[in-house]
Length: 349
Figure 1 (spheres, rainbow, N blue to C red):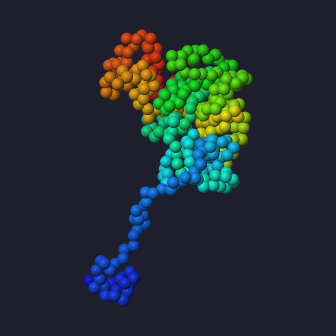
Figure 2 (figure 1 turned 180 degrees about the horizontal axis):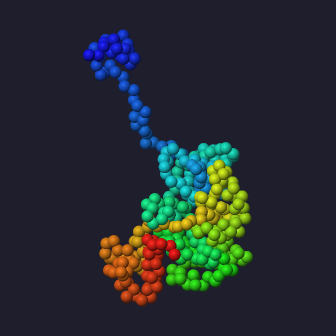
Figure 3 (figure 1 turned 180 degrees about the vertical axis):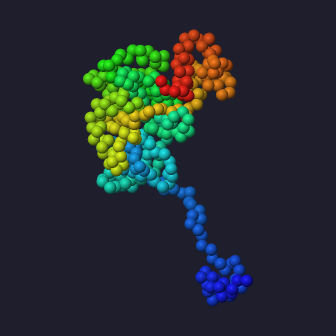
């Protein structure tokens, strides 16, 4: 049996001192609502005064944004609370509110993220289920490959092509170190895919590459040592200065570990991405690759379930072989398609 004095003390501590606890019922007890028990309003600020910007760098919860795409009006911003964990990457078109002056120690807020026209995605490897968005809204992807030292890796090129076809980017082969080796054999292996290309050399003229990049948003991807940084420094004279300014928002973090958009002197942006060891495609399905080849896309719908479209012996009943039987001119295109499909699930060469 509970001591009546102790019970009275407990009741008194609840704001009911002086009253007989034996005469109380539940209506006499006031329960304070716990934290988070009040329903959150679904109404969100309209932010009609928000200004448009493009994300040019990301580092540790801070985004560098160019107002209206103007490289001379760059501000630092944070993600607004109402966006939750909405991913925001370099190239995203966003809306900003708050202090957009760009003065030191000022911070704007990203309140909206626009729809993406294209997305360059990759996974760490072919077994990693986590998909990483490298850059958004790039119009073209320059696949930077050296012709020698190191030797070209066609498996890596094929994987980048798959990422372009499934992500909505236009692929461009950018072959470097042509002073060390000729590009003919490598270009011949991609002739059937009609991939645009540009060939550069250490002491050569860069006008063709500059014309290709002008007034467009272009991403560059390549293995370490292929000359990607050299290209960027030649087409963007202030690249070292720009990357140094961006690293300041990350407390000295080395900028080569994240993508950064650099403005071109004649207009346009170059998105320099970190050198990669592998380009995983765990997020890409065979049908998504086939969709980039219109002459095979319709026929692929008649293939048996789970067909990988690789042909015999892996997929002996693949209908794509019938397309080639009726039109021999498509044989080389099918071979290229199957090479891309094989690279999606195999080891880079």
